[in-house]
Amino acid sequence: MKISQLIREKAKKNPKIIVLPEGEEPRMIKAAETIIREGFASLILLGKEESIKSKARELGVDLSNKIQIINPKDSEKLKEYAETYYQLRKNKGVNSDEAYQLLENSLYFGA
Image (cartoon, rainbow, N blue to C red; front, side, top):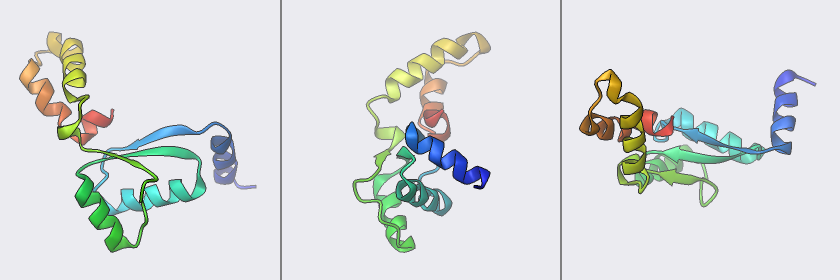
């Protein structure tokens, strides 16, 4: 058995949540398809829902109701995450407005 197969089998026994921050990118949509098909994790794609669904259709990928899509800019968690980030980074010179702007970025939001 290949190491990648071994890892997948182990992951299926204890599924986790994977967050893909660049959810509008074709490579992430294809990765999402593989993760869903293999069934070794729950999945969250970050980005604009309509854009993700449109690109998935173009790629022939069915993501219907099998994943959670979150747009960081519209998320109810944005304010909470920005405040947490601000509290952690204020000693490094980050102000609350900067924290909010950074957390609108899916790469920061997903981390």
